[in-house]
Amino acid sequence: MIRIAKPDEPRINEEIRVPQCRLIGVDGSQLGFFAIKDAQRVADDQGLDLVEIAPNANPPVCRVMNYGKYKYEQAIKAKAARKNQVKVDIKEMKFRPKIDVGDYETKKKHIMRFLGEGSKVKITIMFRGREMAHPELGLNMLEKLAADLKDVCTVEAPPKLEGRNMHMMVAPLRDSAKSGKSQDKSESVAEEDNKE
Image 1 (spheres, rainbow, N blue to C red):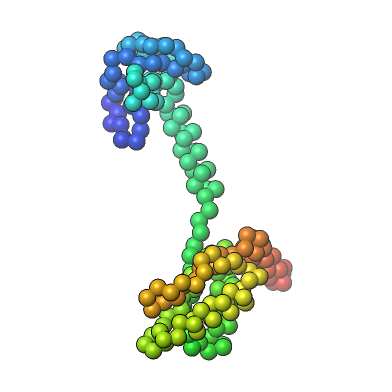
Image 2 (tube, rainbow, N blue to C red):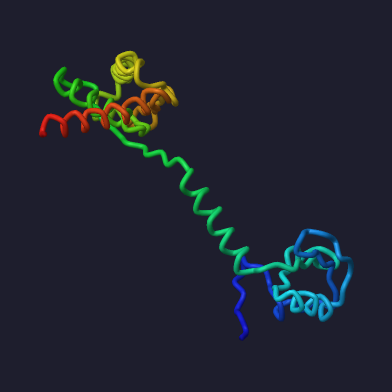
């Protein structure tokens, strides 16, 4: 059966079309230089595959191994690496320079909730018309917000004016994000206990 090799996969067995190779045994020992037919015979005698692991070397390096088992182990490692990867969400909250106190408090609570979930938050102040003449109003609001949230976040990117918008990026403190998640779990357990 002829296997069609993908570009990112190594060539195995009959796909290897070089006259000779440096051969590595199953246990990782150097067996020396072999003609490709002889190297294939060594692999076949052990009931294993001949895999080209370094095609750009001179001569190419081949290894005797169980290719199916090797691919399976690589897939398991890749899955474990993806599982341990931390995905950071970035939420955005928009403000206006002339925001009412109640609206400010509501948006601040939303930001605190996002930070508690472990997300970063991009805070944007949008200027319209003549409000552009007073960018210090937006700067003051962002500084006030940073001061109000200093217990739960750190300012990752300080306020910066770009066009008609002023941005600031805040990230949760490491321990507050964890405690927020554990607090959510403890609240849900308490609610279940109350239902019983």
